[in-house]
Length: 323
Length: 314
Image (tube, rainbow over all chains, first blue to last red; front, side, top):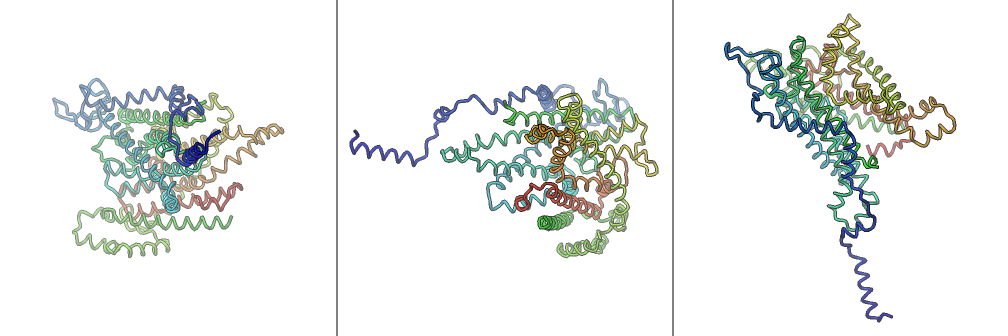
């Protein structure tokens, strides 16, 4: 038998513990249902099973490293220097690929090999900037859209207006209004891509926000940071990585297109779009076709690799494919 | 249903109005060279001023905007400055439309028929050689920029097959390659959609029930799978149809087809501001109208969609 004192003391403890948040204790959390399932472990495991994607990943990693270190390697020429014949002083125009110029020279005597790698750097930089912007702005905008209920109607209207205009037209209009430059290119391409991302994030947030497991997490006193990293982020990170990977073929494609219609980068900046366009000017004579084929092949290898890797990663990051 | 369509129409009209206004105001930011033919350099600043004034470009923006709405209501899109100086834009475009429509329709028919057929075959032979080959095709078309592979098609296919490299009005053989080029993307898109949809759908319970009760495969395909697959497609079909028949910007310009898409490229390259503005307005309006039709069409095809809720959440 407990004494009255003891009983009331126990009751006080009970009441208190009922009405305070439980401390988060990792060990206690793991004790309930132990499983060695790890989201990222499984994602990597499934991705590695895709032999094609892994091979392309290796190719792209070496290509990326190469484009970065290429100007530092010995014996490389400047991408914009016009080479003259030392004896005659005439420009070495349309020189065939060979020992001196590995990919030949273009119509004003610039080294195509150096131009291709410099162009790849430019185009990948644009793609990366556009991809990062898409993800950052898309998530911020989408989160506001999903979380702040007062903004929902307004942002939905903005979305309807912008998404109704065909992408190509919007991009062309913006590039036309601004002067051709690196910034113009990036801004024009950033104007449309975030829409899809924002919409995706908004829908995910609305779905996940009120799910039972989230409600349960909140009630158990899980800190917001942990809700974000464990409950929300796994849904988004896969999409973020996929978006950046897929924005590379997309952005490079738009750049080639905008360059073709005369809204591309200024011609003194080598880029894959400018190189393809220069090659197109020379394509009607069969002996000069290398000027189109080399840039086009490098470009296609890059876009196809990123497209396949992006999709393989998207598949791998879907938990339904983990078992 | 009618109520939903009307509300959606109203929404589209408001969107068109907003887009028209934004485009018009954006175009005011352009350098003024685009309002002169090639005599810009020869003029004195006073003469330039006089030309701009006669075009009403020096008025305050709200006066210009008001005049712009008035002109649009009367069907007046302005006059071209550089492309064909002082010719009404509506007149220039009227000549171009038939070419774009003809090629666009051909491309849509080709891509729908072969794309859907290909997707159905792929889903039935899932995982086998046929499926893998066409998946390769789809990856290629989606990953490589059209501006690159279409160039190579023009270059090498004309060489191998001896087809003409440019469009000629009096030579129907020269129409083949542009029409096929225009449909390559659509074929990949429709096939990918159809395959994914059918693979998902064929594993569902109602299909297994249909099989169990002895329905033939063909009847299952037509009555269940195809009909359901069409519903989500209905939303995007009008937009793609409208934008295709209004002209492929790249292909028309590549093969020198005198259509609307090629015209836009010309107008941009020659900096004809009024013409660019008119074409941008036309393409955007078509895009908005296409989405409107798509939403209505989807509501017609799918009785499961609850209209009231749909209108609110979109």
